[in-house]
Length: 115
Image 1 (cartoon, rainbow, N blue to C red):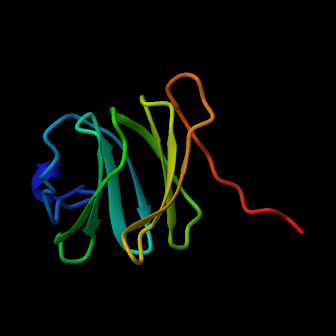
Image 2 (spheres, rainbow, N blue to C red):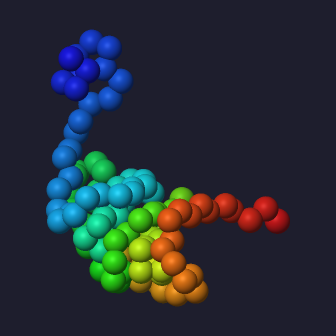
């Protein structure tokens, strides 16, 4: 059985991350961290190696719908509250909260500038 890591398995479940009180709507991986956004208005951060919950980031007033990362230490969360939050996941702090949209932020992407 693939789910149990049997022959033909392509991946093995190492940790089950729990903590959100609503559906998980998005996730990303950055610098060995799993970051997830949920209907419960929070962004949660886990260490991928240990499975340990590191932080709950609460700034949104409605569901967190999408996440993007710069691949270094910044994660952006977009929400049904029309905001984009910029988080430093090294320090687990809010860096900036941008409220320019008039409706929900449904998706985001990040591209390194080519100089």
